[in-house]
Length: 432
Image (cartoon, rainbow, N blue to C red; front, side, top):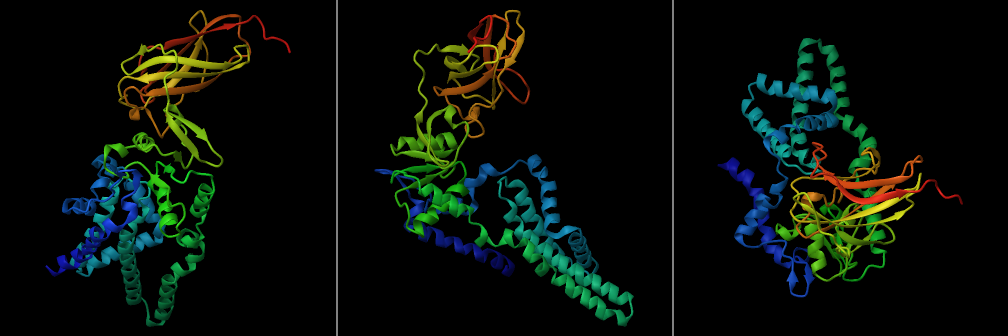
């Protein structure tokens, strides 16, 4: 019972959160008149969900994926302790077992395994700091292993060698101090000024005072809170990112951008996001900022030609030289009829009259990594652009341009290639 009280007592610190939450301004940002985003629920159930981390449940891996992380966890352990340290850790565990300290072995072992097991299942990118409690336990084992090794050698050697052994032990204990100069840069965050410089650059841009800034990464946006709450800069800006709230309106980048645009405030991304232009009209600004102007409209006219079960082809635009050795820039417009079940890649190919493929543009993923096809919704207009270099040897005649989508994992096409244009090659390239 006393042990349970010792373990659970620190959790009482969570009671400070519901007391302070209602008075914390960044937990209740105002998006528009009468529209406030509640980032903390101070009800008993909301506090319990906060303590249990329910909002991070989607980041949990299944057992198979968790087991696949074990080599990474082992590599991190070796990176921190090296092989000598790892062997001393094993010796420390052996010492606890051989000396009959089974209770301490079980207590420390369960603590170590519980931390590592949680981290194997918790699928976030910056998981390394979560291993620190396990490393502290491993450090205790390493110290026991070092002491046990000295004790064993001392027993097996003459008393004249004991001062030398004690000297070697002291040197081993000061090894971390000797390693500090080389490791300082990774620990001393006073030297990490990249984030500060980046936000200085962002805030130096001529942003509207009420702009909404969007990123796909929470960690990239949190420094704005420091700038606002501690330094008092840019109080009218609002920073948003996916999963800022468990509501579906913030489920992914596409939903976050839609929710931000719905406020009527000017919306900017704080970095380039290749692929966002597939769904949104954007304007590049100095630096890395992009102004998100709104959803892509359908072209006029729109053919609404069915392509498989998920899309309709609307139209295309092109410019360039349809000549031997020339280059064409082709933009295709599609309308989504159903949300695609997997991530698609698109293709654009050119065939001659005999049905032979003579050239193709580079296949790619419309929407990129930021707005892939599983984030598309019915009625969305998707814009997909290609650069098509034509062969230097291009016999005169007609050529058919076809386009479509396929599953990059299996190569299976969504539907038969769709003819979208006909090229007429002249007999020769005009002389200049």
